Length: 323
Ligand code: 8YV
Image 1 (cartoon, helix red, strand yellow):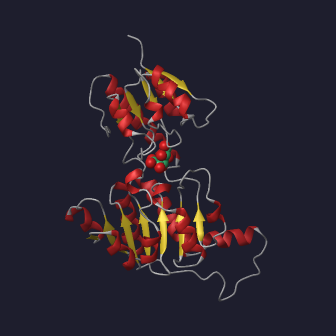
Image 2 (image 1 turned 135 degrees about the horizontal axis):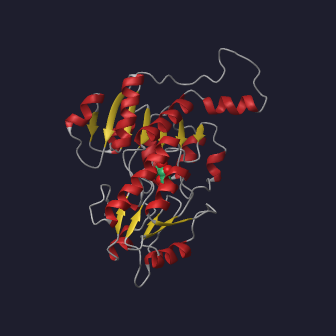
Image 3 (image 1 turned 180 degrees about the vertical axis):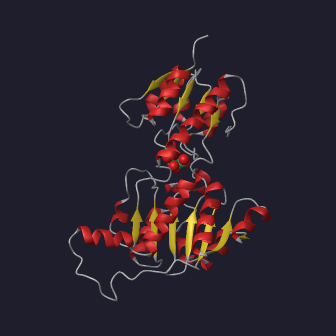
């Protein structure tokens, strides 16, 4: 029997590409550029499986194909808001993702941003590299103590829980959680966390707020001017979820006018384009979407995709089916 024809849209870790090439008729996108909507649309016509990443916007228009060949979209990553799920559902496609294997590394990056912005590490590095450091002085780049402070976690899935583990056990932080559904007491207990009913309740009591909810239309601009105004004037906002969750214009104003203490962002609305309003804010640390960027996580994500595909084409239920 012919092997399923599989499109890998970006370069993946070599060990995973090798396995994909062995198990499937895999086509590797060797130029490693984001695919256009047109190319993705064509891909749906000719591949049994498409393996998108966050840079592949599979919009409603891309699904406007009479009889697609594609039966499964095996996403490389946990977030899949770049895939129009109605479009995929309309063609009865299966969609899978790669949860668990990147939770620790993504929480590490959220913690990195939190520490960097609180301790003004980004500002310090920029100053030093610019040759502007004039030496130690008691009032130089004085930041905010992290230990013992209150951390609000928006979205208490796997990554949110890993963030709580680091913050509570490593830094003695008090954890407050907001989640779309009720979190079981057993899940809150290890971090001595309390759940609140709304963001309105969470924002004013936190020294740090870290976003770990899904992106997509439902959460677009969840953090807007109104929410930013509810934050303490010296509180910090961290985003390793999706750029669209924050209204970046509202955030740039809050940073510029210092109505909040600062922010740390790993993701951006319309990335890799960065809203120019953000670039001038000193109290902002920015990273280029590094959440899962470790050798270990990226390989594990790839092998998880291989498992999902293998199960799907063998007629078994893929473990990470999201639709
Ligand atoms: C991935 C991420 O690297 O998994 C996710 O949702 O945000 C990233 O860590 C990226 O999505 C790959 O497609």
